[in-house]
Image 1 (spheres, rainbow, N blue to C red):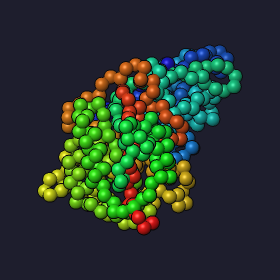
Image 2 (cartoon, helix red, strand yellow):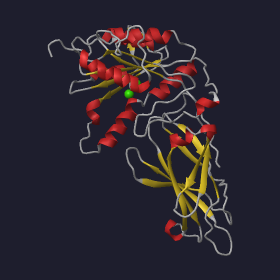
Image 3 (cartoon, protein in one colour):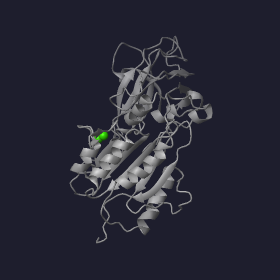
Image 4 (cartoon, protein in one colour):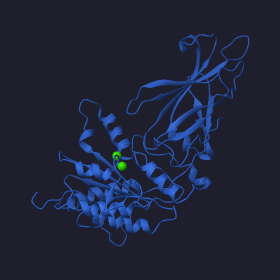
Length: 371
Ligand SMILES: [Ca+2]
Ligand SMILES: [Ca+2]
């Protein structure tokens, strides 16, 4: 058995978008490796680096004398990054000497899991069998954490249309529905210029302005391959949208110059339009070319892209909620079990205390009649 608690998580206060999770570990029915007494177990936790499958030791618990059912006092405190697949491994050893080298001790068993699996466990408790091929032993966790609600809107613009082809009901069923609608759109859409962002930002802002109670948050994803045509109107639209529950992620595709996108990203200088300043930074810009795996593994490039695309969203959500004085609600117990569970290897979409709705629409991008 084990318990997890929110650490020093403070909405709006994190410089890195992560939630601290405290994991404590207990085991039952361990192998008895000592002849005259019981085993003296210690648990070692391993983690992997982003994009790597190699485990490295993270921390060890204390050693507990003469027990096959240890409840370790030492807690593992880890950062939970919702956009990463965080693999964990736990190994149990019967410690027979003061030697630090793990090979000097009797191996009792191991389990592997993901941090998301621990956070997604029903009743905040995850129990798994320890494996070593000899005996059934058990290992478990419990967790609690803060839940946020995010809405994802995937939009491709300029001629506004519903990407799922249904103007009556433009909503998609989850990320799979968005992907399906996007692939469907690619077959029927002719891209052309000029590239205007302001209309679609204003369109999503109208959705966002209808939900200012903290129950929904909107993310506009714009894929663009060209130079923006309506920079001043776009700045104005973003400054207006900066007071609404929405964020904008711009992914630049192709070799073009994206200086204007950096201005919209506003990481170094707050965005302004006609003397009016944005209430907060709501834009993240990522040039796709930086993630084409030149020499590095595709897996690592994908992981870096996913991480950077989503990098600013957690702080942007939290800052909006904080400015409005909106605090996270306890989620219903039956929905806690879905938190953190996402298909392995995929970009993780945070599950929420209520429904996520996806509104697909038109395509952003430089669109060109001539091409
Ligand atoms: Ca930014
Ligand atoms: Ca940025």
